Length: 281
Length: 155
Image 1: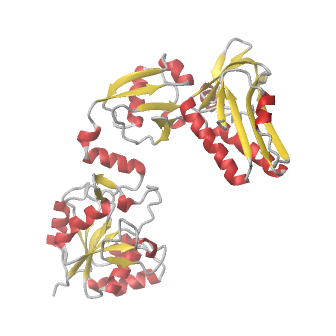
Image 2 (image 1 turned 90 degrees about the vertical axis):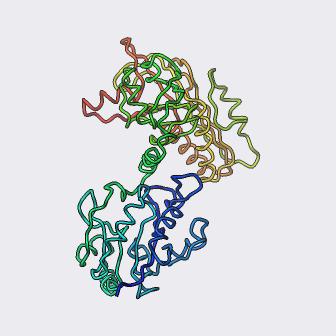
Image 3 (image 1 turned 120 degrees about the horizontal axis):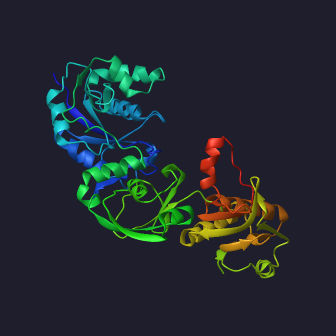
């Protein structure tokens, strides 16, 4: 008999590389990534839970959801899966990461339709490396003892667990749907792809030049209309018009008078400064 | 009184020092960076400083706030010159006054080091042979080709 299917959205990460809480990021105004993942998964399962660390239970992004709290520390996503299986041992768990900005309904519907409850797990094959994608996958209840034993020997990689288990591996209907966004660069690139109208339109910005770049540009300031989505692309565009000798990786960026990321989207009216290597004192 | 500032005119060290006088402070340490007549084997005849002042003033203020936080100092200021400077001119001044000397020495060192590394300020050197160059920009590109590590030890 096919076990009842519950949903587990993983939101217990530390977002170290993003330097901001990934669950709280928004790709659409007013909707956190966590809320988007919960809403997408809900129609496919009997109930959705959110996997959290003990210290995250009361934070604003997570407190409105039914939670499964990690019982072991610093074990990554596998701790969430273990805790869920321990709370509802007879259920199958659809595990879903909250940091998949390109996840679409077709991908979820396909996994739901092709689930094979007679296997240990049903998962997609990564379009990057062919290995199982553990963070949008269904773990049947029969994996519970094996997963606990696996973690008991100090192994924490859910992908390797699925590799050695009896996992049904499917090709995803959309190769990019499971690409995750781990860094600020990833976030802004995903934003630009998901909201092209907001970021790709031509807009007027101002560029100010100092020191060597001022001499090579032949001016202190210029206004220009550009479709460059970020300072990184803008600098490459400007290099076609000015004989800039400095490589981008020797420069820093300021936008509107404050240090900024190379991947920060440019908006109409921004003033951008490319900061050459400094030499004060 | 701004704790970090730029000046297009020569610095008045006596007035700057007086501004840090404090009856609760037994120690005062200052650092002066002067325009030197040589750099990396070249004879330097004069300098120009340029700054992105809008951002540099904010970052300079952050540096001083950090020094205050780390070393518990009472008072600190830093003023940096912009524009054309002749040899021997005073290019940058840092002053710290604090109840005891150790914190004053350490905070002064911290402020000048961070100012040099973090603030958007650039220095163009003019050489005796007629050449000129932006320090750390043009000459670092050359450095890569001669496999020579540049350490810029001026003020």
